[in-house]
Image 1 (cartoon, rainbow, N blue to C red):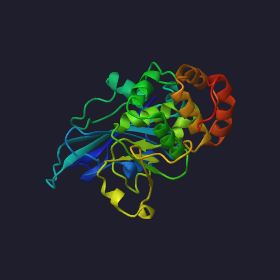
Image 2: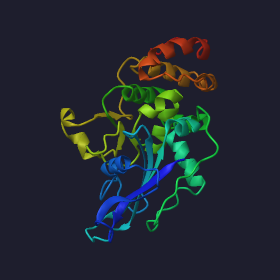
Image 3: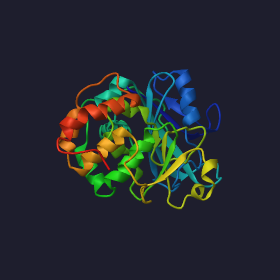
Length: 300
Protein backbone atom coordinates (compact mmCIF):
# COMPACT_ATOMS: atom_id res chain seq x y z
CA UNK A 1 0.00 0.00 0.00
CA UNK A 2 1.10 3.55 -0.72
CA UNK A 3 1.17 5.77 2.35
CA UNK A 4 0.56 9.51 2.18
CA UNK A 5 1.00 12.67 4.20
CA UNK A 6 0.22 16.39 3.97
CA UNK A 7 2.68 19.07 5.03
CA UNK A 8 1.31 22.60 5.27
CA UNK A 9 0.64 25.49 7.63
CA UNK A 10 -2.15 24.86 10.13
CA UNK A 11 -3.29 26.34 13.40
CA UNK A 12 -5.23 25.10 16.37
CA UNK A 13 -3.44 21.77 16.67
CA UNK A 14 -0.47 20.91 18.89
CA UNK A 15 1.35 23.89 17.40
CA UNK A 16 0.75 26.55 14.77
CA UNK A 17 2.71 26.77 11.54
CA UNK A 18 4.16 24.38 8.98
CA UNK A 19 4.09 20.74 9.99
CA UNK A 20 3.01 17.26 8.92
CA UNK A 21 -0.66 17.99 9.47
CA UNK A 22 -1.95 14.48 8.74
CA UNK A 23 -0.48 11.15 7.64
CA UNK A 24 -1.74 7.64 6.93
CA UNK A 25 -1.18 4.88 9.44
CA UNK A 26 1.91 3.40 7.76
CA UNK A 27 4.00 6.56 8.02
CA UNK A 28 6.49 6.02 10.83
CA UNK A 29 7.52 8.70 13.30
CA UNK A 30 10.99 8.75 11.70
CA UNK A 31 9.51 9.20 8.22
CA UNK A 32 7.21 11.98 9.45
CA UNK A 33 10.21 13.77 10.96
CA UNK A 34 12.08 13.47 7.67
CA UNK A 35 9.08 14.74 5.70
CA UNK A 36 8.97 17.77 7.99
CA UNK A 37 12.66 18.43 7.36
CA UNK A 38 12.21 18.33 3.57
CA UNK A 39 8.82 20.04 3.67
CA UNK A 40 8.63 23.36 1.79
CA UNK A 41 7.29 26.21 3.88
CA UNK A 42 6.48 29.85 3.20
CA UNK A 43 8.12 31.32 0.07
CA UNK A 44 9.73 28.02 -0.98
CA UNK A 45 8.44 28.03 -4.55
CA UNK A 46 10.45 29.54 -7.41
CA UNK A 47 7.29 31.23 -8.67
CA UNK A 48 5.19 31.92 -5.53
CA UNK A 49 1.88 32.75 -7.18
CA UNK A 50 -1.47 31.05 -6.48
CA UNK A 51 -1.73 27.81 -8.41
CA UNK A 52 2.03 27.36 -8.91
CA UNK A 53 3.11 23.73 -8.60
CA UNK A 54 6.21 21.65 -8.12
CA UNK A 55 6.71 17.89 -8.36
CA UNK A 56 9.47 16.59 -6.10
CA UNK A 57 11.23 13.26 -5.56
CA UNK A 58 13.79 12.07 -3.03
CA UNK A 59 14.72 8.93 -1.06
CA UNK A 60 13.93 8.41 2.62
CA UNK A 61 16.18 6.88 5.26
CA UNK A 62 13.62 4.09 5.68
CA UNK A 63 14.36 2.83 2.16
CA UNK A 64 11.13 4.19 0.72
CA UNK A 65 10.85 7.14 -1.64
CA UNK A 66 8.83 10.34 -1.37
CA UNK A 67 7.00 11.70 -4.42
CA UNK A 68 5.27 14.96 -3.61
CA UNK A 69 3.16 17.65 -5.22
CA UNK A 70 3.63 21.14 -3.79
CA UNK A 71 0.96 23.77 -4.57
CA UNK A 72 0.73 27.47 -3.75
CA UNK A 73 -2.71 28.32 -2.34
CA UNK A 74 -4.20 31.61 -1.16
CA UNK A 75 -2.88 33.91 1.55
CA UNK A 76 -1.60 32.39 4.79
CA UNK A 77 -3.67 32.80 7.95
CA UNK A 78 -0.66 34.45 9.63
CA UNK A 79 -1.10 37.54 7.46
CA UNK A 80 2.63 37.84 6.75
CA UNK A 81 2.01 37.92 3.00
CA UNK A 82 2.59 35.37 0.28
CA UNK A 83 0.86 32.09 -0.44
CA UNK A 84 0.23 29.15 1.80
CA UNK A 85 2.29 26.20 0.56
CA UNK A 86 0.56 22.80 0.56
CA UNK A 87 2.50 19.57 -0.10
CA UNK A 88 0.86 16.18 -0.62
CA UNK A 89 3.43 13.38 -0.33
CA UNK A 90 3.22 9.74 -1.43
CA UNK A 91 5.56 7.21 0.19
CA UNK A 92 6.38 4.30 -2.12
CA UNK A 93 8.76 1.37 -1.99
CA UNK A 94 11.03 0.22 -4.81
CA UNK A 95 8.51 -2.33 -6.10
CA UNK A 96 5.73 0.27 -6.35
CA UNK A 97 8.13 2.63 -8.11
CA UNK A 98 9.20 -0.12 -10.52
CA UNK A 99 5.54 -0.71 -11.42
CA UNK A 100 5.67 2.72 -13.10
CA UNK A 101 9.13 2.25 -14.65
CA UNK A 102 10.76 4.10 -11.71
CA UNK A 103 9.31 7.31 -13.13
CA UNK A 104 7.88 9.45 -10.29
CA UNK A 105 6.01 11.63 -12.80
CA UNK A 106 4.03 8.71 -14.17
CA UNK A 107 3.25 7.35 -10.71
CA UNK A 108 1.92 10.63 -9.36
CA UNK A 109 0.00 11.21 -12.63
CA UNK A 110 -1.71 7.84 -12.09
CA UNK A 111 -2.51 8.76 -8.48
CA UNK A 112 -3.98 12.10 -9.55
CA UNK A 113 -6.01 10.51 -12.35
CA UNK A 114 -7.44 8.06 -9.82
CA UNK A 115 -8.44 10.85 -7.45
CA UNK A 116 -5.81 9.88 -4.87
CA UNK A 117 -4.16 13.32 -4.93
CA UNK A 118 -7.13 15.71 -5.04
CA UNK A 119 -6.88 19.45 -5.48
CA UNK A 120 -5.75 21.04 -2.19
CA UNK A 121 -8.56 22.16 0.07
CA UNK A 122 -8.99 21.95 3.83
CA UNK A 123 -6.61 19.50 5.44
CA UNK A 124 -8.52 16.22 5.86
CA UNK A 125 -8.93 14.74 9.33
CA UNK A 126 -7.38 11.44 8.22
CA UNK A 127 -5.62 9.79 5.29
CA UNK A 128 -5.69 6.12 4.31
CA UNK A 129 -3.11 4.04 2.45
CA UNK A 130 -4.09 3.08 -1.10
CA UNK A 131 -2.94 0.96 -4.02
CA UNK A 132 -2.57 1.77 -7.71
CA UNK A 133 -3.27 -0.47 -10.68
CA UNK A 134 -1.66 -0.15 -14.09
CA UNK A 135 1.93 0.64 -14.92
CA UNK A 136 4.20 2.30 -17.47
CA UNK A 137 6.50 1.33 -20.32
CA UNK A 138 10.25 1.61 -19.84
CA UNK A 139 10.55 4.57 -22.21
CA UNK A 140 7.93 7.22 -22.96
CA UNK A 141 8.80 7.82 -26.61
CA UNK A 142 6.01 10.36 -27.06
CA UNK A 143 7.40 12.52 -24.28
CA UNK A 144 10.94 12.31 -25.70
CA UNK A 145 9.67 13.32 -29.13
CA UNK A 146 8.04 16.41 -27.58
CA UNK A 147 11.21 17.25 -25.71
CA UNK A 148 13.39 16.95 -28.81
CA UNK A 149 11.30 19.64 -30.49
CA UNK A 150 12.58 22.05 -27.84
CA UNK A 151 16.04 20.82 -26.84
CA UNK A 152 18.87 19.62 -29.10
CA UNK A 153 20.25 16.10 -28.49
CA UNK A 154 23.70 17.41 -27.53
CA UNK A 155 22.18 19.77 -24.94
CA UNK A 156 20.30 16.81 -23.44
CA UNK A 157 23.54 14.85 -23.46
CA UNK A 158 25.32 17.63 -21.55
CA UNK A 159 22.57 17.64 -18.93
CA UNK A 160 22.58 13.85 -18.71
CA UNK A 161 26.36 13.76 -18.32
CA UNK A 162 26.23 16.39 -15.57
CA UNK A 163 23.46 14.50 -13.76
CA UNK A 164 25.60 11.36 -13.71
CA UNK A 165 28.26 13.25 -11.75
CA UNK A 166 28.31 13.68 -8.00
CA UNK A 167 27.70 17.45 -7.80
CA UNK A 168 24.12 18.78 -7.47
CA UNK A 169 22.90 20.53 -10.62
CA UNK A 170 20.83 23.66 -11.19
CA UNK A 171 19.41 23.88 -14.72
CA UNK A 172 18.57 27.04 -16.62
CA UNK A 173 16.29 26.40 -19.58
CA UNK A 174 13.26 27.84 -21.33
CA UNK A 175 11.84 24.32 -21.51
CA UNK A 176 9.45 23.57 -18.62
CA UNK A 177 11.36 21.69 -15.96
CA UNK A 178 8.72 18.98 -15.70
CA UNK A 179 9.14 18.07 -19.38
CA UNK A 180 12.92 18.38 -19.17
CA UNK A 181 13.38 16.28 -16.02
CA UNK A 182 10.86 13.63 -17.10
CA UNK A 183 12.67 13.34 -20.42
CA UNK A 184 16.00 13.05 -18.64
CA UNK A 185 14.73 10.10 -16.58
CA UNK A 186 13.54 8.37 -19.75
CA UNK A 187 17.09 8.54 -21.09
CA UNK A 188 18.33 6.44 -18.17
CA UNK A 189 17.83 2.70 -17.59
CA UNK A 190 14.87 2.04 -15.32
CA UNK A 191 17.10 0.70 -12.53
CA UNK A 192 19.08 3.96 -12.32
CA UNK A 193 16.24 6.46 -12.23
CA UNK A 194 15.66 6.37 -8.48
CA UNK A 195 19.23 7.66 -8.01
CA UNK A 196 18.13 11.09 -9.30
CA UNK A 197 16.34 13.27 -6.74
CA UNK A 198 14.75 16.40 -8.15
CA UNK A 199 12.32 19.26 -7.76
CA UNK A 200 10.66 21.02 -10.67
CA UNK A 201 9.80 24.24 -8.85
CA UNK A 202 11.20 24.60 -5.32
CA UNK A 203 13.99 26.99 -4.41
CA UNK A 204 17.31 25.51 -3.40
CA UNK A 205 17.63 24.93 0.34
CA UNK A 206 20.23 23.06 2.42
CA UNK A 207 17.27 21.33 4.09
CA UNK A 208 16.25 19.89 0.72
CA UNK A 209 19.43 18.56 -0.94
CA UNK A 210 17.92 17.61 -4.29
CA UNK A 211 20.37 16.49 -6.94
CA UNK A 212 18.53 18.32 -9.72
CA UNK A 213 16.80 21.71 -9.40
CA UNK A 214 15.74 24.38 -11.87
CA UNK A 215 16.60 28.07 -11.91
CA UNK A 216 14.80 30.95 -13.62
CA UNK A 217 16.78 32.60 -16.41
CA UNK A 218 17.15 35.79 -14.35
CA UNK A 219 18.21 33.96 -11.18
CA UNK A 220 20.34 36.11 -8.91
CA UNK A 221 22.48 33.04 -8.14
CA UNK A 222 23.92 33.24 -11.65
CA UNK A 223 25.44 36.62 -10.90
CA UNK A 224 27.40 35.31 -7.94
CA UNK A 225 30.87 33.80 -8.13
CA UNK A 226 30.38 30.21 -9.42
CA UNK A 227 32.69 28.81 -6.74
CA UNK A 228 30.37 30.12 -4.01
CA UNK A 229 27.35 28.19 -5.27
CA UNK A 230 26.28 24.94 -3.57
CA UNK A 231 25.61 23.41 -7.01
CA UNK A 232 26.89 23.50 -10.57
CA UNK A 233 24.85 25.55 -13.04
CA UNK A 234 24.17 24.28 -16.54
CA UNK A 235 22.56 26.64 -19.05
CA UNK A 236 21.08 24.64 -21.92
CA UNK A 237 20.97 27.73 -24.13
CA UNK A 238 24.73 28.29 -23.93
CA UNK A 239 27.11 27.09 -26.61
CA UNK A 240 28.39 23.58 -25.91
CA UNK A 241 32.09 22.99 -25.46
CA UNK A 242 33.87 21.11 -28.27
CA UNK A 243 33.66 17.33 -28.09
CA UNK A 244 30.94 14.99 -26.97
CA UNK A 245 28.56 15.13 -24.02
CA UNK A 246 31.25 13.94 -21.62
CA UNK A 247 30.00 10.68 -20.11
CA UNK A 248 30.04 7.48 -22.23
CA UNK A 249 26.35 6.83 -21.51
CA UNK A 250 25.47 10.41 -22.45
CA UNK A 251 27.49 10.14 -25.68
CA UNK A 252 25.66 6.92 -26.51
CA UNK A 253 22.27 8.54 -25.86
CA UNK A 254 23.17 11.54 -28.06
CA UNK A 255 23.95 9.12 -30.90
CA UNK A 256 20.60 7.38 -30.35
CA UNK A 257 18.71 10.67 -30.51
CA UNK A 258 20.61 12.09 -33.47
CA UNK A 259 20.15 8.96 -35.55
CA UNK A 260 16.50 8.37 -34.61
CA UNK A 261 17.04 4.99 -32.99
CA UNK A 262 14.51 5.51 -30.17
CA UNK A 263 12.61 2.25 -30.87
CA UNK A 264 15.79 0.19 -30.52
CA UNK A 265 16.78 2.15 -27.42
CA UNK A 266 13.36 1.61 -25.82
CA UNK A 267 13.52 -2.11 -26.55
CA UNK A 268 16.95 -2.35 -24.92
CA UNK A 269 15.75 -0.61 -21.75
CA UNK A 270 12.86 -3.08 -21.35
CA UNK A 271 15.34 -5.74 -20.24
CA UNK A 272 15.74 -5.95 -16.48
CA UNK A 273 19.17 -5.34 -14.99
CA UNK A 274 18.51 -5.55 -11.22
CA UNK A 275 22.06 -4.75 -10.08
CA UNK A 276 22.64 -1.82 -12.43
CA UNK A 277 23.77 1.53 -10.97
CA UNK A 278 25.36 4.67 -12.40
CA UNK A 279 28.76 2.98 -12.12
CA UNK A 280 27.77 0.34 -14.66
CA UNK A 281 26.55 2.71 -17.37
CA UNK A 282 29.92 2.93 -19.17
CA UNK A 283 29.92 -0.82 -19.82
CA UNK A 284 26.21 -0.85 -20.65
CA UNK A 285 26.68 1.84 -23.31
CA UNK A 286 29.44 -0.23 -24.93
CA UNK A 287 27.30 -3.39 -24.91
CA UNK A 288 24.15 -1.75 -26.30
CA UNK A 289 25.73 0.34 -29.04
CA UNK A 290 26.24 -2.48 -31.60
CA UNK A 291 22.58 -3.54 -31.42
CA UNK A 292 20.87 -0.16 -31.10
CA UNK A 293 23.24 1.86 -33.30
CA UNK A 294 24.14 -0.59 -36.07
CA UNK A 295 25.39 2.04 -38.50
CA UNK A 296 26.92 4.67 -36.25
CA UNK A 297 30.15 5.68 -34.66
CA UNK A 298 30.61 7.50 -31.37
CA UNK A 299 29.68 11.18 -31.03
CA UNK A 300 32.44 13.47 -32.30
